Image 1: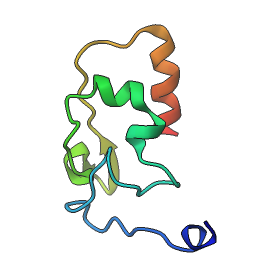
Image 2 (image 1 turned 180 degrees about the vertical axis):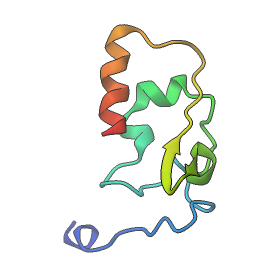
Image 3 (image 1 turned 45 degrees about the vertical axis):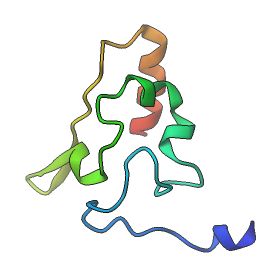
Image 4 (image 1 turned 90 degrees about the horizontal axis):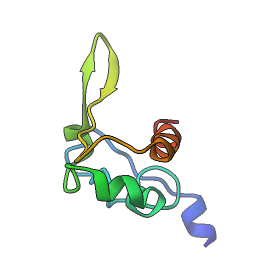
Length: 82
């Protein structure tokens, strides 16, 4: 819809935004866009703030997975990281 193209969600400190289940990047949830990674995540209920930390002024992601990735899953993860 045209309305969706003109609004965005402000993440702020990340305490109120679900990393996987809220639309905060693009037009889909990360759960929908990266369903395979969602299934492998140990952080399915995590908020954005729970997924990383600030270090020397830069954000560092801290993902936790149920197991090591298969080779083809690394490509999906690399896409998630951008």
